[in-house]
Each structure stands twice: as structure tokens, then as C-alpha cells.
Image 1 (cartoon, rainbow, N blue to C red):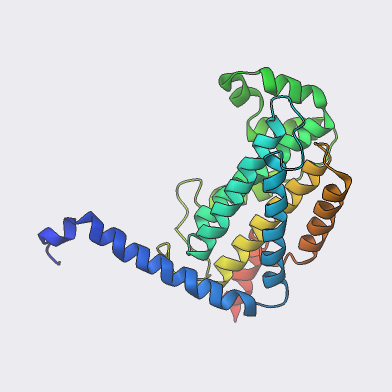
Image 2 (image 1 turned 45 degrees about the horizontal axis):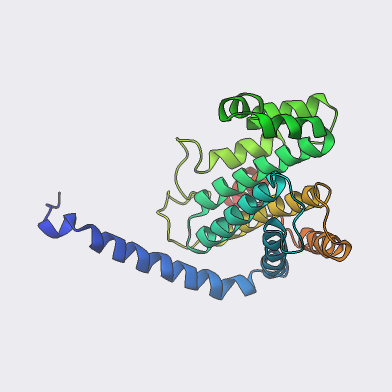
Length: 254
């Protein structure tokens, strides 16, 4: 068993080594992404434009509508989460990217409820943090959508799968190959990158559709957002969490 030296306790050395590993993974992801089929590069590009417009919409770039800016603030949070998720994805932190995708998915369901039942937005706005956690948790929001007979953008199965990677303890870290061992963040995985990109993309696309119906934007901005969301949706690939079990079975048999 190897011993320890004083140098093993130098935190700066660890940070420097890990940053180098992450930067190398980022560079490799950037290099390989354009060659990962037809859809992935186009989805990545479309998401950048989509987030650019959503970010400006969240900060009253096209005019302030007044009020408490509840929807704008939720949208700004979506943009921040998506940007962070994409950055983590590039650096090989796929579990963490999926955890942030889950956060976006929660906001998709929440704003969907506001759109279907405007009274819930008024209630949410007035509620304190304790009441929001009690009445508007992810489970409660999904149940209220189901009880209202409305569509649930992110249902229980997908939400559970998003939760199982990184958010909940017990899952092996960065485990995206059927026969591969768990891995540290900062190591490139093609399937990890593709799954993360598609799941982030799906959540952002769904949020965009709900956002357009929840706020008054200039007509040309709404039309541009709608067109971009449709374009991005066309580029969503088949590599996602719902297909992971099938992917593992297929690759284990080969």
C-alpha cells in the first residue's frame, strides 16, 4: 500500500491536475463533437442560438413588462442551468450535467402548470418558501398536471432517470458504458456526451415552447424562438436516458 508524503496534502496541486484533466476533456469534446453524426453538431449549434434569445428575453432586452418578473427570473435560471450543464458536459461531468437538466425539467413542468392554471401562478407568487416547497415540489406539480388532465412535459419515468444520475446517491459515477467501470469527471465518453446533449436539449426545447405561451414578446421574437425550438427538436438524437437500458443490452450482446 503506497504511503503518503507531505505533497499529497497540497490542495493546489490537486486542483491544478484536475483542471488540466478537465481542460483536456473540454478540448477533446470540442474537437470530436462536429463529427458525432449529423444531429449532434446541429443540436449544439441550435441550442446556443436558442439560449441567446431566451437569455435576452429574461432580462427585458425587448422591453420590460413590469410586475415581479417571476417568469423572467425562472427563464434566467433555465439559461444559467443550461449553460452550466453544457460546460460540465464538455468537461466530462455527465452526471452533473444531467442533474442540471433535471432542474430545467422541473421548471418546464412548473411553468406548464402556470400556463394551464393561471391561478397557481398567483398563488406561487404570494407563497413563502415553505409553502412553495410543500405545494409546488416536483412531485406535487406533476400530480396537479395529471389531475387537471393536462400534459406532463417531463413524466415520472424520465424524471426518475434524470434523478438517478448524480442527484440521488447510490448510482456509480459517470457510468455510461455497459461493461465499463465508474469513472471520474474529466474523462471523455462519447455516449455520455451525446446523452447529456440530448437531455439538455430536450429540457431547453420544452421550456422554450412553454415560455412562448407564458409571456408577451414581440411577434418576430416569438416566431424566431418557435422556429428555433422546432429546428432543435429535429436534431434531437436517439441517445437519451430512456434508451440507456436498451443500449446497454444491445452493446453487451455484441
